[in-house]
Amino acid sequence: MAHPDAQRPIAVFDSGVGGLTVLHELLVQLPHEDFVYLGDTARFPYGDKSAEDLQRFALQIAERQITAGAKMLVVACNAATSAALPALRALVARAARGVDLVAVVEPESRLAVEASLTGHVGLLATPATVSSGAYANAVARLDSEIELTSVPCPDLAPIIQGGSPFDEALVDAVRSYCDPLRDARVDTVILGCTHYPLIRPILQRTLGRGVRLVFSGDVLAAEVERRLAVHGLLNGGSVEGRYRFECTGDPDAFRALGTRFLQMPLGEVVHVELDAALAASTR
Ligand code: DGL
Image (cartoon, rainbow, N blue to C red; front, side):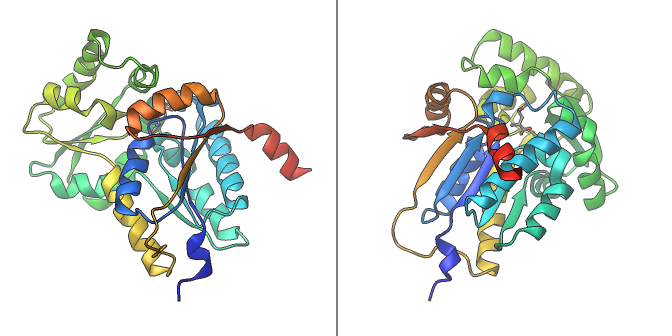
């Protein structure tokens, strides 16, 4: 008989719509699971925030979703993972009701290390993620011979989230961010921000067909499935799972942009006030 906790939803969160690239892989890989996706759009972008702020935001969201009954947290945000993974692990370990945690950075670092034939790997990510050193550490732990060229891209996620991504300004920004990677002759590039798979065609054209682009969605979805199976928490029903959305900013803007990026109907998007929720929970 299925474990009663298997019915609980999986909570996915990101600073905005970028994590929808991860959610899509999860919806395909785990069609019988229920998902709740939270985009912290009021505080977007995360990529220019301090590590302290990012840790606070991530803990606030994680606490909320654990209290709401999530059986697993998927941190679909590289900046949040880079700043807050140890603190998130500690929070999950303290949770009264069992909850697991899967995050980005490590899965796609492993994929890149395995994919690279030349040992020259590139990273495109937000300034917060690059300066945290999370990818440099993960890659070095996996293979100390790999030469990682990291490029902070302050404009990319805001342009993509701005909603009109496919213009010359974006192509110019991509070209300038890719120049150091071409100079370093990388054969594999980690897309270290969940927004970047949304502009994969532009990145692939700029870097060339021979460069392998690696991102977190499919490896992360496989990891989520593996962990649920280990804990006996896979929702094995034959009914299609439900998914719903929460955001801290304007729900109509989230729905309009999210529908374009997920290419699936979003349905209701609920506005949530994180600061108010935290104040209430600590009273
Ligand atoms: N989606 C976030 C990430 O993966 C970045 C976008 C932002 O700056 O908020 O890092």
